[in-house]
Amino acid sequence: MRIAVIGGGISGLGTAFVMGRRIPGAEIDVFEKNRTPGGTIASYRNDGFLMETGPNGFLSGKPTTLKIVDMLEQQETLLPANAKAEKRMIVKRGHLVTLPDTPLKFFTSSILSFGGKLRIMKEPFVHKKVGSEDETIADFGQRRLGEQAVTWMLDPMVSGVFAGNVDKLSLASCFPRIHELEMQYGSLIMAMLKLRSKKASPSGRLTSFENGMGQLIEMLALSGAFHLHAGSEVLEIRKEADGFHLDHGCGAYDAVVLAVPAYSLAEMTVPGLKDVREDLASVPYPPMAIVPFAVKKGVVDGFGFLIPSVEKSGILGALYSSGIFPNRGTDKYDLVTVMLGGDRHYEVRDMDQAMLVNAASEELAGFLKVERRELENIGLFKWRRAIPQYYTGHYRIVERMEAAAASVPGLFVTGNAFYGIGINDCTLAAFNTAERVQEFLTKEKE
Ligand SMILES: Cc1cc2nc3c(=O)[nH]c(=O)nc-3n(C[C@H](O)[C@H](O)[C@H](O)COP(=O)(O)OP(=O)(O)OC[C@H]3O[C@@H](n4cnc5c(N)ncnc54)[C@H](O)[C@@H]3O)c2cc1C
Image 1 (cartoon, protein in one colour):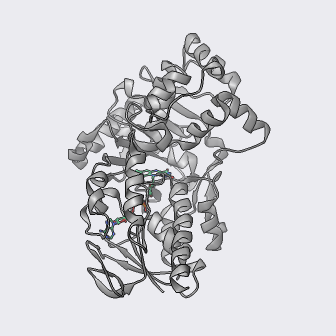
Image 2 (image 1 turned 180 degrees about the vertical axis):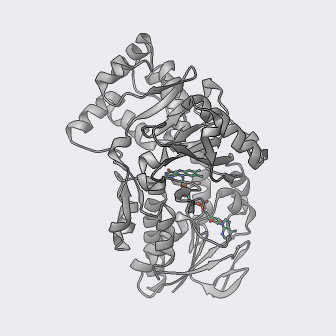
């Protein structure tokens, strides 16, 4: 049985790896456009610092990424975040304010006014949503928690996860668990209290690898579970009597898994997907830039900060990367990573290196209250199209794509445009896709 996987990001590599381990006798080829696999995931070193081009880690509360690490027998490479780096901040009226991490601290913190806190306390008495209309995160937040909670809590959180805009993103598509909790318990506060009493850990701890997130990609690529064809862009797939054929040659395949970004899929010629090309092309992918700085030890402390959009800053926030994972910095310097771009800052796509570094250092110096010369820029990475945005109505795009793919037996679609943008979402989808492919091939043999 021969299976082709198109796209060598975590979605494609994860699916290929699970299929390689679970489908006996499967011969799996992964085709990746770039010279190196990993998609948005890669780690690089410079002068003793270890930096990331994309994700910094994944949460240990969901099992699928950890399960892949177990299957690789590489548990010793895991690196949990430093427990001392819990302090998270937002910017409020130009100053860093620590986010409360206990209910008591919430009442004494300056993050919301007295009225704003009172409004949150009313949440258990707010009726649950009626009707099935897709709701933005901002509308959901206004309804359940009040305007201040949206401005100072939800907006920066959404910016930190999606680099997205609360006024456009769909709550049910972006945070399906929160949507489910409202539907099941009628209140988020009541749900939290009930789940806490069951000792359920909703998220877990941020986790990475000794050598950065790129190590996960290396371990998958070297696992022997599949054959990787790097530098191999696939633009056309045809279905013939003996199976699927790619524009690369390589013979016939019994099944094909597409794990490329939605905009790439829109440009490919794939049986069955012609009618959903417009849908796929409509998924927005704003740009992002990641600008790391070396900062003398003692200046920063904690996890980092995010900036609510009302603050009108040119940056989204900064991660204190070596506070979170100490081996990312050196003995004398911390690594601080500034993020720019996202759905409110498309101008980042046209900014050159000097402009990005300038904007990042100016804003960072202001928030840290240091001189700009105290921040040494040590790298830069720009994504012209970074994270797919699930606007309201996104679920219809997913439904139409699924129906189109299902019309072609042996064709499967996965990736962060459809099943969640977190690494844990991509690895969960990898297990699900591998299972669907296995079922299909088993039926074919019968
Ligand atoms: C800056 C940034 C920070 C992030 N931080 C976090 C974080 O801290 N935690 C977290 O959980 N998630 C984070 N994410 C999200 C997460 O990294 C991504 O959602 C995930 O890595 C996407 O994986 P993917 O394989 O679905 O897509 P991609 O990584 O986009 O991979 C798709 C691959 O397909 C290839 N390809 C495209 N077209 C073709 C073609 N025609 N033929 C062959 N190959 C093709 C591409 O080159 C690419 O390698 C972050 C993302 C970004 C950009």
